[in-house]
Length: 146
Image 1: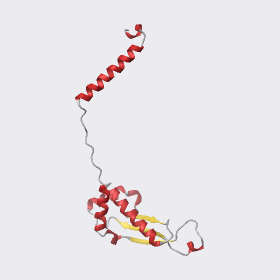
Image 2 (image 1 turned 120 degrees about the vertical axis):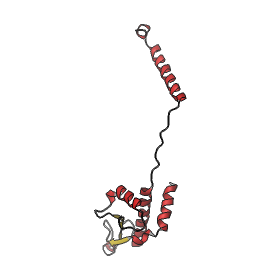
Image 3 (image 1 turned 180 degrees about the vertical axis):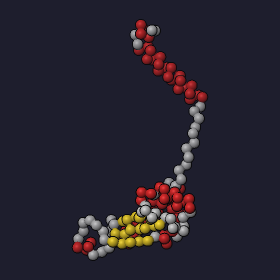
Image 4 (image 1 turned 135 degrees about the vertical axis):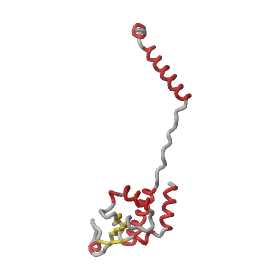
């Protein structure tokens, strides 16, 4: 997980937050009389294709991995409406954004194939012989030597 934190630190240094676009609207769901008057739902919009802070490779990776969360124009939308204040929902959107980007920018390490040692192969074959001999001994004498 340390790689995720490195990516997060780099993202925050780049001042990528200057490219965020916030929209507010009324939250859905249950609530009292106050809920119908206040716009507490926050939507963070980030255009990956037009970003100046992401490299071309990073843009390609994000467009590929986040294709299900993007609009047709390549805009990432993150919504938060759980809290009762706009500011708290805005903070939640920003945290969600950074986590989402950091997780998707991690490049998985390639698995190195290991060669099975001769000692292990011999041990496995000896074990197979031992088990088969045990099974032979369970049979009746007539069946065992047919």
